[in-house]
Length: 111
Image 1: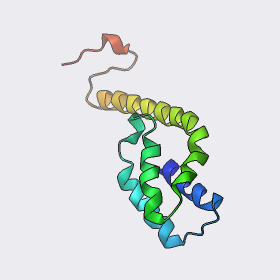
Image 2: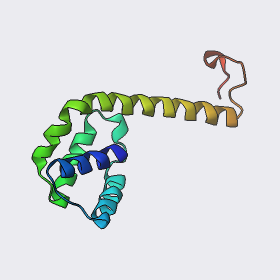
Image 3: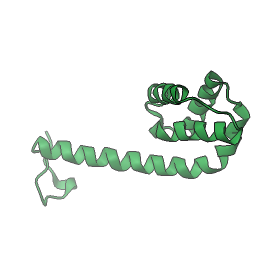
């Protein structure tokens, strides 16, 4: 969500388009809703940004400005998502007392 918002704002600045604070907050709210679940889908952020640009009358060609760095940023988003999901799974398993401290995950008793 933050990446999509920053990318959209970058495109607006690159084209010299001034957005009001209200438009920026509306963009943040719109992207908060439309960007759910994109962390697990490669290049999904480009689709969300491409759909958002016309709503705020920003040129769709600006998407080409972020195309070069999106691949690297996408790998970072995916890695962060995987680490976050892994940590959450370990915390929940400890909370449910399914994983004991010091016990390897492969030998944990589930069920």
